[in-house]
Length: 260
Image (cartoon, rainbow, N blue to C red; front, side):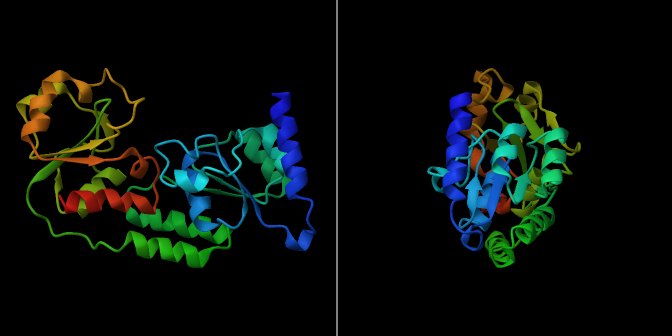
């Protein structure tokens, strides 16, 4: 731990050795979702990313590869003294209060039930990072596919762990944007029973997080009884990288389903 803190101090000293006028904005990201926002909106800033910034399920993992990664702790924040902090779920109340005392501007990415919520997130983070033009470019990228007209069949979202999503979730919005009805009518996230999948199979399956090595291998989605269902029903696979964060790239999931 002491060696890690020493290395961080050395890095801060080196990056802060330039004259104040030439010093770039110092940004601390507290979780993987926030990493994606700061990488896309302020790649020119002095970014300190979370430890999971270049994990396989991070959308901008390639851009994060050589960036500094730090544990999102109070001690780290006190050493870095960032000008801006971006978070989705990371950071506790004590840490956020201390950052506020230090004068850092903190912006929180909100859960988004639809792409309107994602647009609000992009604009909120872009405003704090002084990157409004980049933010609007991300929104245009997200909106390149217009909503498809309803096509009739229903689709059911299923994770490897056996969860699905109904109204009030971004998943539901993405399914409907692609022109499908959601086979799940109960709101929010919920487990789905094996019996329902076998006895009342949906017209189409949308599988999420199945490519992750650490996904729940004992979950309903991995049950051998579903192999025939996956083989006989149309299946669209959504990679984890477009599902882990309410961001502009969520729209890619809808594009995949619309093009299936």
